[in-house]
Length: 299
Image (cartoon, rainbow, N blue to C red; front, top):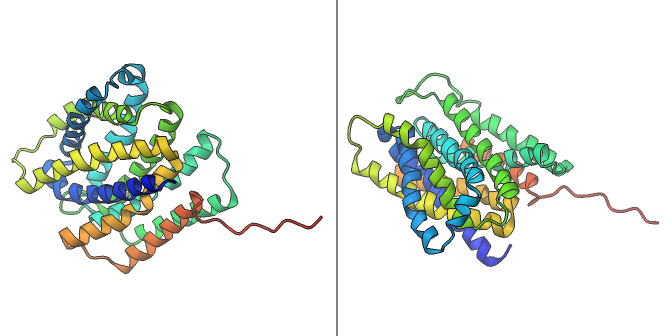
């Protein structure tokens, strides 16, 4: 990975770590559907003029079916699901569960793309999902909280969202390889906007949200979606989906940091231990850490 790619990876982690802060700030007042609609709609308004300026609109006509699938799998579903989770879980905890995306990516790659699972990757999958169970063990209450969402449902929403991310990364690599990253980002957000327009309008809040909630929408749409997806699809194009999705190593660090700094969220020992277990499993799955191999026998 080049230095420029590494810098983009860290910047993307900081931005996406902040997305959990923004969702936590806006989900209660807007609701998951309206918040997600504004998020993808604002990102589309940001990205489409750039696409026209770069004269890459032809890619939308050529790959509109694939872009629609990416828009639904990589934006509509995970954005709504993480917004639901934000009603019950703090930003730091949601960002830690987000780190399971490479685990799903590896599992889907093995089943769909026939990627070989080495012993290190199999062990990583086991460790990673063990970390999820550890972290969720004392949180998975089914009792609805203040906003009608239980912690157990919120955790399930996080895991389903990361499953979507794992599928989306593999699908984009398989179906959209060679497509300009700006076209993938803009096209997928346009498709997501069309899908969420009616549900988001139907679920519009009866009371006008506060200025704080609107600022969270701006952060989600322009920074955490528009700019972030430009960086993400650039990384997929430059270093491949397996390395691009490794951004999830760093997202929990920023998610916990921003939540503690701006929302006063507590960082518990269980969060640290569970997050560490998940990251160790993810490191094994993506090849950052490998089991020691056997030395070759002498002839």
